[in-house]
Each structure stands twice: as C-alpha cells, then as structure tokens.
Length: 250
Image (cartoon, rainbow, N blue to C red; front, side, top):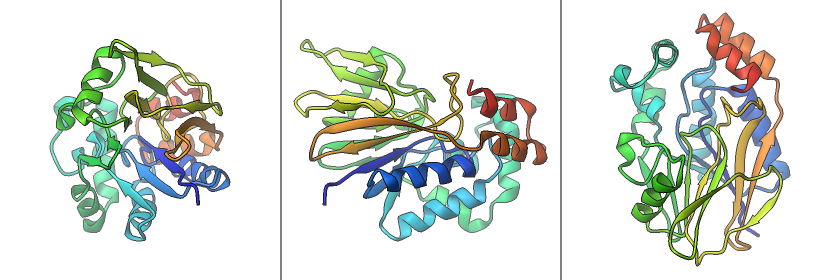
C-alpha cells in the first residue's frame, strides 16, 4: 500500500472543519495522520477534537505534536497572546477534564523520522514558537531539522519553501489540488495552513497530503459548514471576532 500522510495543523477546536477534512482525507486514501499542533484554542469544541485525536493516536493511526495554544492550557502564556486568544484559552480550560489536559501535556514538541521532521512552529528553537513565513525563517527551520522534509503549522496560510541551488529557501504559494514533486535532494519546508481558522480570505479548511514513496506533496482546501462553527463560537460566549474570522477566512 502506498503511504499517504495527512498533515493537519491548527485545528483550534473546530469540529465541523475537522470532520470534513477527515472525510476528504479518507477519500484521498490517507494511511496515517499527523497533527501539527494547536489542537485547541479559538473555537468551541476542544474536548470533542481532543477525544478524536487521542483515539487516533491510541490506535496507532496518528501522531501529534504540541502547539502554543495547547501549551497555554497548562502553562501561563497570557503575555504571548492577544485578548481574544487568551479569552478562548480561559474558556477552553473550563471545558476539559484531567485526561484532556494530560493528553496535551504529553505531546512532544517535535518528532523526527528518517527523512521527515514534524513540528508546530519551527524546528529552530521549537519551544519559542517562531513563525516560518519567509526565506530566513524557513532556512533556519530546515537547517535545524536536518531532514529532506519538514512540515509545520503555526502560520495559518499555506506555503512551501524549497532549497535553491545556492542553498537559499525560496517561498512558493501552492495551488490546492496540484501534485508538487518534492525530490529529496533538496530541503523542503511545508506550511500546511490552518484547518480550524484559515486567514487568507478563504474560509475553507486547509490540510496537505504527502506521499513519501512517490515524492509528491498536495495541498488541499475543504469546504465545511463554517457558519455552524461560527454560531457555536457565539453561543459559547467567545469573542465575536473569532466567529467573524471563521466566516470571512481572515
């Protein structure tokens, strides 16, 4: 069976988006899943999303890494987030039981496989939650990872950085659905985009699929009922701008 790795980042307690992406991943033949952090935060279904991921991890169908919003559940990070993010974290804490919190505490910061690195923010000082958004931050990430492929979240827009002939990491904006050849003689850093809170003006959920054997990477966008997710945010009493962001995608 051809291995197809589903890459999901920044789910942010968005159950509607998560379920839609799981259905699409199954249609695409995904054989295992990697959750690149920020399972919780911002939206209204933290317990349900953790339960789903914990079950996948327990059944060896997935691995997951820690994100900064996940860490904020059990570590004071108020000075690192804006007011809406902090309000969502404080509400999230009231929705989780001890098992949920322990699951987040047990998540590793980074996972190294033979040719692949998985991390939420950057392989360069992962606990400092640096963003990979341009050539230098991508280069630092790739150099520290030391792998052909590094996959990250944190930045909520999809992007792919590839190594040029002189070693510089160059940014490429992928088109959803296009298969991108990613040959291992270069270093690649894929920013898979946010499943649960896209910010590029398109409310459709982001994820990506990597096929190691055929050396192909495909970025995807999946429509879901973002109006229902936004209404849940409002009913939970979370800040209105978080609901608006789901509707507008920015």
